[in-house]
Image (cartoon, rainbow, N blue to C red):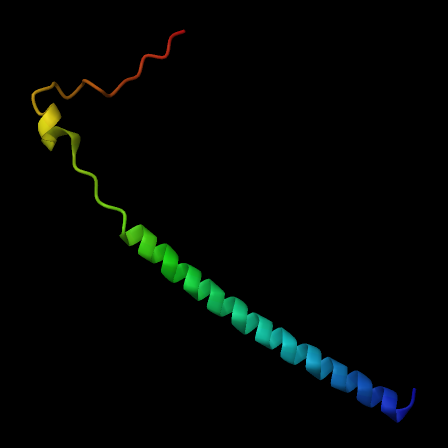
Length: 72
């Protein structure tokens, strides 16, 4: 192996290392953005109103509407 071959290998390894570092940095940034988007979606979910306080079903007994008959 000649000196120029060793220099070429060293240069190639340095370029690959730099490329990997850039790719990892981009991936981390993309993960951070996705985490922010997920947090925004979760915080945008409205809190459901309890069934007992809904005006349309306030006169019904609490056991109605909790079971589904699935006989065929």
